[in-house]
Length: 360
Image (cartoon, rainbow, N blue to C red):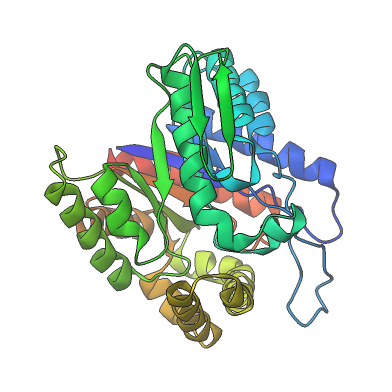
């Protein structure tokens, strides 16, 4: 069982980007010293800062636009912990360059890299890179095929709709053979069975989905996995908001404002991005946006969060692990990016020392 942290590299209103980098590195070192198995970095682009008085609430931009460079810095600061990206947005990168960079970090770390991949559910990043979001699914598939071919062949060629590679030798190859553990993000109804049929481990979350909906979709993933003849029962890591306080009341109170702003902003993002997705995905996004626009904090606590005392959080995570058949839990410890840095550090410390040991 894998226990880790995910970092979005938020920098708060009134603070600096330098402080955000320092906080991210401190969190990685806390995870290592606290005995966790991994840290994961998001990939985020073009989130403009906004003041708390903005109609959408304080915008929380991120310094993690190039997570592989951040990963390289983290592996240089640590000795044991694994480092992953959840996820590398493949269509925004040239796949040969991505293959070279991931392999380089894997060599530098002596095999501590996890390779999370996805295509992102929001069109804003694609607009900034002048790539039509409607091409994202096909581009993702071509990118993944090229990266795996680059790692598993001395030389290779590839002819596709978007990329044509002619007899190249990609060096270095990854330290881990044949390549770092691959994990694909699954967020839409159609993605779960597709990834299951391919036999890939998945990364899921409780942002757009609540627990009952996610349990249902994981059933589809596992059915497709078994129908395709793959051994085992699938491989599932979940990204889940976790905040640990000395008491349940303390945890709820400290995290409430930041959490509610995050989910309200997510509701607006779902609605705004629906026009850029395919027809089915658009309907799904609109429905999720509508649900989240009226969600209460009590409903989030019930279906999407693991907040409370160490005993509360351990019990919730144990329950969710059994309910979903998880192989990994990755805690998001500052949902919304507005929780004070010292409170986030206290929560991580409690998670490492009083929650995870009871789950192992």
